[in-house]
Image 1 (spheres, helix red, strand yellow):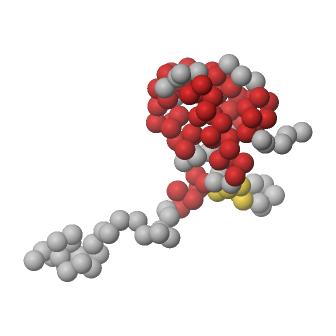
Image 2 (cartoon, one colour; image 1 turned 90 degrees about the horizontal axis):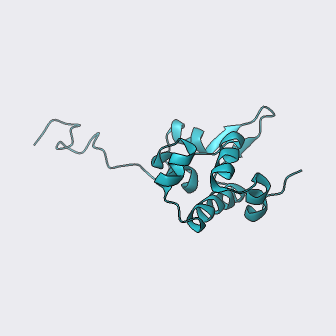
Length: 118
């Protein structure tokens, strides 16, 4: 038997992996951003999910891999994957670059994702 608290010990302090409600502060930060007016923007909201799905569909329609799109954007494949999965929120500058790399207009992306804009 190992030391108490070690992985081979009595079980106290053993890591059993993340618990259902165990979300790190950093992970919450990726999803929820507080605006200057105090409202929280949740990147898991339906609008964001539609946007991420649209970006993935546009890439796939152009027969581009995440790596190829990443090269056009100057990003790694991992970062493209994080955008498309919604694990990293995309900002307006990144979205503009995405549109350019995919050969579409920014409004085309928003229209296709069903996102209202002024």
